[in-house]
Length: 178
Length: 416
Ligand SMILES: Cc1ncc(COP(=O)(O)O)c(C=O)c1O
Image (tube, rainbow over the protein chains, first blue to last red):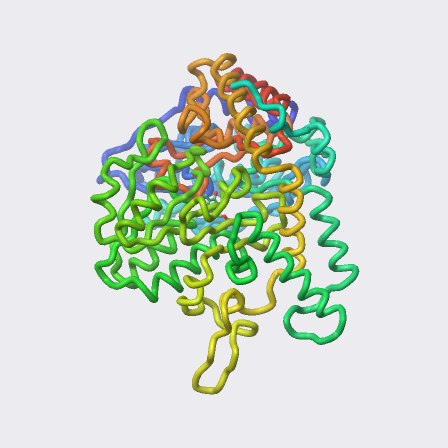
């Protein structure tokens, strides 16, 4: 069961059971973005308020699995109140964490998972992913978010974890917020 | 229901024919409950394909040398086997080999549909159709201005047929699944086909789920077209079939153009070949046809009444066991039991998302499919975005259902 416990860490289950910042901000003034995962029909709505170079408020709504819901909750807690450059940096670091899974994939012959790499969503606005070495050291900066690291061993679930992050990045791009 | 001994299936023995069942996943034996998506293949099918490649592979209908003639004979022989399996009257002429059920349905919409449907004509479908029997018609409606109507699905997972006659008014063709891949619902096809014919409409049945799991005889079914895929009935991927009566196929224009589907080609026109070759442009899936024939031979050896009887028993066992051991925590969609349901168990467990259920079940070696099952309109009717679907094949047994339930209990513990 260790892979599964690695995926469903206590912090993830906690954010799934009691999501933070759930709901929708009034839009306008907030900016609203919808994200879809066509594979499973999950959808997330992220509403964000950007003022004076910071994400002053953010909420998420929608339906989805524990990974997409907890990732959205963790994302909202991590970026709320943060200045834009820090938010952009978090997005970059999080996405690079989601792309450094090859080394930790189970040996061929065990899971049926192929070595399905990060295949960037259309909305992936900041595509530079750090090299593996950088990525790993950056993960420490992620704090609670690092709990989602176990997802990379389950390639089909990466899209679940990045759904709300892509919506956030898309929203910031649309606002021209850098 | 007391099982009829003449209808029994020796599951323990037949399981040995399926190499994938010997595999372990996460240290657990594989429990394959995703046959509605694609079935496993017995060695006999794999051996037939390998033997074909090793002894007589050549392109078909082209060479005069010995192996080319042998390959052609194997390919045309496969057509006859597949046709007989569903009771075709003239299998040499009435089975068109295609890539899969999806292509068969596209063929009907594009060939028959474009030749026969005019703006304002109506097509009657159902809310429980797979996207394969929806999107080709939606595409036609966009191009051609035909009107699409739908039979609705009730709370019990059955089609509402109360207004069938009214809905059939002005309809030229009815497209309907012979077994739902989400609910397992088996609609009363004969009754619907009779009503359709009385209203002057043809019927195209999507047999992707029915043909692998029920004894199907196209003469008794009363439909005009039947589409199905080999990979859901113990055969290989890459091949499926469309059945239609020879006169009907004769009246239809080609769908895809190319080699093999013509009698003559000039720079300004072409003369199409006779059916079924008229609809088989390009080099066909020859080894796959050989595998398809081996699959129907295998199923005939098991006996389709036996397969159905086994799957009914196992579905009853699963429905009872889920209710007994999980109670209200488990929601099961679709009609309650046979005779009008097949071994497709779409379930919800508390409010745990289908993806999470499938993930936990994978740790138990259990393969189920989470998602919308290519039936998004039906999911909207059911009011869910996804279900976890466990589906049964001839090789499943009660132990498989027990492991499924064990995994569901663990998912409940993890997410409570
Ligand atoms: C009812 C039904 N129709 C059509 C299809 C399409 O089959 P294929 O993907 O083999 O074309 C499926 C397969 O999922 C199905 O279940």
